[in-house]
Amino acid sequence: MSSMLAVPLVRSTVYGRNGHDMPGRSPAPTYRHATPSGPWPWMDFDVDPPSSSSEVDQTWKGYPQNLFGNWTPDRVERSKMLISCPSGTCKIYTIDVVKNGTFDGDMASRVLNVPATGLDEFWEHVNVKRPENVRLRAIFVDNMTVEVLKMLGTRYNIEPFFFSSSMNWIPSRYQEAEKDNVGDHITIVLPFVRAQEGRKSRPASLLSSSTLPTTYGPAPLEDSNQIIDTQASLPLLLSDWVLVQDLLAVHMVRHVESSSIISYHPHRRTSARRLHSLIQRTSNSVYWSKMFKASSDPTLLLLTYLWYVLYAWDVTFEQLYKYITRLETQVLNTNDIQLTRQLHIVQAHLLYYRSLLQAFRKSVEFVRDTRNPAVSALGEQEQKESAQALEREANNLLSEISRLESQRMIQSDRLKNVMDLAFASVNIDDSRYTKRLTEATVRDSAAMKQISYLTMVFLPASFTASLFGMNVREFIGDPNGVTAPETLPRYVAVTLALTTFTAWLVIALQPHSSFHPPGCSRWRRFGWPIFFVWYKLTSRKAPEKYV
Image 1 (tube, rainbow, N blue to C red):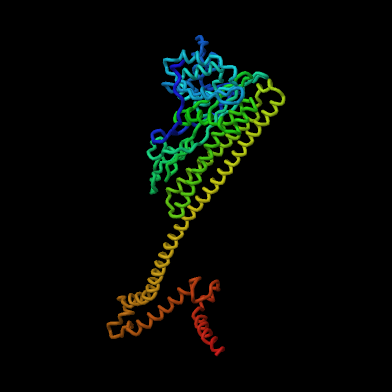
Image 2 (image 1 turned 135 degrees about the vertical axis):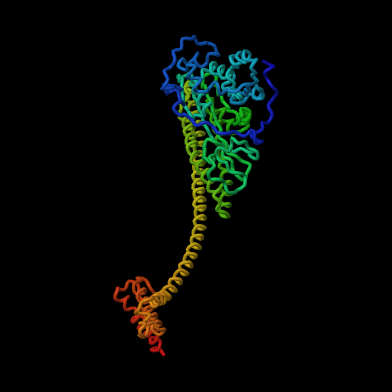
């Protein structure tokens, strides 16, 4: 085994420091396949289950059917728990917690490499009996291959739902194999969101939730890629940050003799090396060291995994706060439709984060309320102290989750306010444009009214001229010496009379005019010249009374 052990660990680097390491979208979860309580795991109801007459390999190579007979090969294939496993060398990091509550530094500084050619050696290593002073072993698996999955599943009797839920990002939490005074198995699969740097040269896979460029400008509305996908990462424009969806997948075997925690780490998410380093550092915390020494309940170490999720959420909302602040500044300076689209994208992700925070809360409550059967073998006083410590720390986590939920609600309301501001800015500009259009329409209407007035003035004269120009005897006179009636004075007289009558009739027929008050009767409108002259005379005499 010495060839498989590496040198002590050095400080890990964060994935995603260059754009090509950035993760893409996570699959949409199928919740019906999340827990063992479902009687038909990954069954296709439209296809009859095939009759399997082949013998099942009872070694680790036959997992999961060697331990769970209902997990037939077709269901395993449909769950993608094996085909989703990568190839290559698997790396395993471990932390041993000894009886006095301290961490074994020598074991924590070693890395177990499992190449494809060293499977038998790893199987022997897995089955080696632990030292008697080890009460808990935390195992962090990076690049989990098919062979390592089968070995761990067989060795620790892991329900296949843990691997299928982890591979398919299905939130789940359940307890199984509960035996008083012996122990149980608990599983937690919890998606969460983590802020990550390194977005300057992100690949095209990241653009599924937002295809916006790094600079603002008009975007084509007919672009079919402009969709809101909450399962994808959320790039924060004008910054080097991106919000990626991460996964915490742990299976804990609580046993009266020695417990185990196995964590699965998807590719391009939080690595096993990073989480191992963070959990190892809890031994440096005076607060947690005292609890590990005072209580032998291994569930307390599981809470530190959940604290990592809380830290990730906290950083996420810090970056979102800064981003929304920048969006507010942009909205105050411009009303670009690009901003409105980005506001809707962020709002959709915030709504999705609500369900993730609810799953986070339920996971912590599940850990707090799920009794550990192994603690029954402890003394009554130690049982009481362990239960109190677990409840206290779980409530501390729940209090922090409530704070995160409040932050999410505040940012969602703030984003809604920014969206209202953006729409108000657009409406103000539209109102200004409408006002200018109305003013232009009024000017055009006034011009048309002037043309109508000119037409009203010249129409009677044109009519009279056409009438007097008719080649009839009544107008051109008699050839026998009768004088023609169309003389110029008569033309002027007829024209003036007809023009006056036309003006009187047009004004009288108008319900709204400055020559008569609004809402007056028809007879009042027909007598408008008299009333108009009377009003002018009375308005001139009124000031003379005060002279």
